[in-house]
Length: 123
Length: 222
Image 1 (cartoon, chains in turn cyan, brown):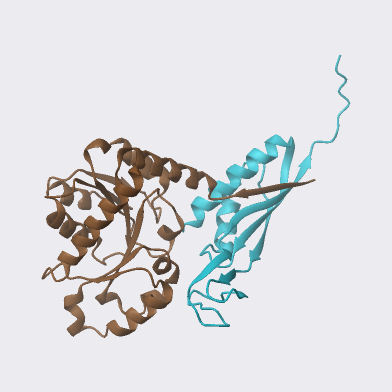
Image 2 (cartoon, chains in turn orange, brown):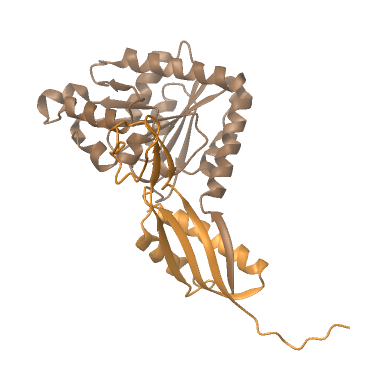
């Protein structure tokens, strides 16, 4: 359910970017989700199809890239991928670590269509 | 045409949360974000805190619910300022909702604001409200497996409260296993056992709260 608020933010950002680029339509949106967040891509897609209606992003396809979690052990310095919430360092079993990656949620890029160049001559 | 965006989707909420945090720091007010599933006893735990600390702390409560004013009326009946936020279906509070609630409180007259978030163990954990401290309540009636099922919220809080401890004799709640699991998830968080019915553990809860509020004020004003 919290994906509703997230989807509103996604639309807000891409509308701003599309306007800035002078786009007439947003064709594709690429969203990066860290694998330790609880955001569900199908839910975002569901809300997006509804909320984007009547906007410059109506009908845009959403692509999700999962970003794997990465952590550094504070005890032995090992670099590892925490597989779930109950993680500890695979080398020394320490539970004290620095989470470097895996909690992200950002828009990587958008693909837009721009108006065909028209023959406007400025005087 | 491809446009690189690289924008954090949570940026708007994060910046409003940072504004809330700054505002509270200027007034030396600690804000606690209290999260739990529906029925874990959030309001009762807050009422125990009011009873136990009102001589020493000036409190206010922000109540988040999908609908109704039941909780804020219960707090107001104790003569404590309470602001009710009805999210109208949304499963969590946002920093903007809390910012509006702060407009209605006299921050200069307060030491501590307790936010009772919407009953839910998933969504509230993702939204920073500008709080100085986060806490989750688990209750014995829910079973000891909650931290396995909702690990993120147990990992990201500063303290964990186990409520309805008087029901231990009647439920298959394995307290030792619960402690072991949360220790693995969040070794730094104190775990406070509490019963709002017979007041077991309320002294510990109130002492922790008071120390947190005072500690946070020292941090904020230093």
